[in-house]
Amino acid sequence: MPNHILAKHISAYVGKEVTLKGWVYNIRKSGKIWFLIFRDGTEFIQCVVLKDQVPDGVFELKSTLTQESSLAVSGIVQEAPRQEAGYEILVNNIEIYHISEEYPIALKEHGVEFLLDKRHLWLRSRGPYAILKIRAELEQACRDFFNERDFTLVDSPMFTPNAAEGSTTLFETQYFDRKAYLTQSGQLYSEAAIMAHNRTYCFGPCFRAEKSKTRRHLTEFWMIEPEMAFYDIHDDMDLAEEFVEYLVQRALNKCRRELQILERDISKLESVKRPFPRITYDEALKILHKKGLELSWGEDLGAPHESAISEDFDRPVMIWRWPAASKAFYMKRDPEDERYVLGVDMIAPEGHGEIIGGSQREEDIKVLLERIEKEQLPKEDFEWFLDLRRFGSVPHSGFGLGLERTVGWICGTHHIRECIPWPRTMVRLKP
Ligand code: ATP
Ligand code: MG
Image 1 (spheres, rainbow, N blue to C red):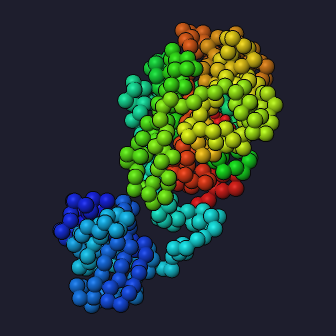
Image 2 (image 1 turned 90 degrees about the vertical axis):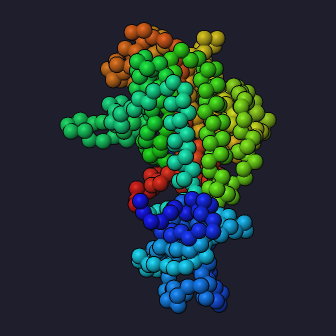
């Protein structure tokens, strides 16, 4: 066992001597006392250095220590209710590992492009630190939610022979002597997996060559996709809202400190309780019309439309029953009106946009074949998928939740690129 503790466990050591190992976040000096704001990747702690309590050499470190120097700090833990962390350290000794060169990210405002170029260092700053901690907790929550509910994790492949979500955003790659595509969604494979496991989910990166520079699109993002046999669209929506409520609750229960660092308005998250409002696409058009945002029937909602609709609700809203033309070939036609499909989008509050896309799937091979022909999709590539409708076809449904969009909403982050450790967009492939 190492002889140091992690800063996050400091509350268990009040009145005792501990050693912490980490980095200098900041230094404040005033005469016979100086303060080291220390971070070790689990908490930010103020360490108090008093001239008459430490050897001279240690006190003089105030003029040699630089931001991001690495060190071991030993001292007594004290309660400090006025400190964010609630505790501080009265320092006895400091040992240096490395004196950092002048750190490019000073503790002041920098342009976001500069920070993204320095992402390998920016990860250490408070905001990115808190967001990625929350992301990690939510990833775990995604797995827990489905594992606790009889779902089996069945991973889907990253290399695929064809498109799942429209050919305009496909990334093509050389695959020996032919072409392959990076996966846009694991759904089609999950539809096969549920015939073996009943309820499944896949969770991994998806790739879409998004040519638009919005604050909601990455070219590489993570999606969790549950798929359920014998679920109709209403069961699908019930599960989606239960899942999203669970994720928000997890953040509220486990990530208070990180949400505090991000200055997130917690009350906005506390109101995220089931049931979520459900409106049809046609009702959404009416709301938009009242707000003076015209959209012709059949068109997909854009970001301004999604924001306008979310304004009316204090929790996510589900828009379902979409015009068939605006949605993918695999969505089930509404038996009551063929012009519609049983698809659903969930829109996050506060203008964070769509976080979930889902649907009941078409289980009738005849209808599916018609749609494949109409959309001029290569039928040979879908033969295996059509087999699922030949051998014990069942009604089934599923959805995909975008991890970064969800993290962005829960954290209150303006741009989705801050919600993934190494963002990839049309204009960014480095570092
Ligand atoms: P949008 O209309 O916003 O591009 P979409 O309809 O293409 O979304 P789906 O195909 O339904 O999205 O994908 C399911 C979910 O995956 C979305 O609700 C969203 O949360 C996420 N998602 C889709 N594309 C991206 C992207 N380029 N970057 C980040 N997340 C995405
Ligand atoms: Mg899209």
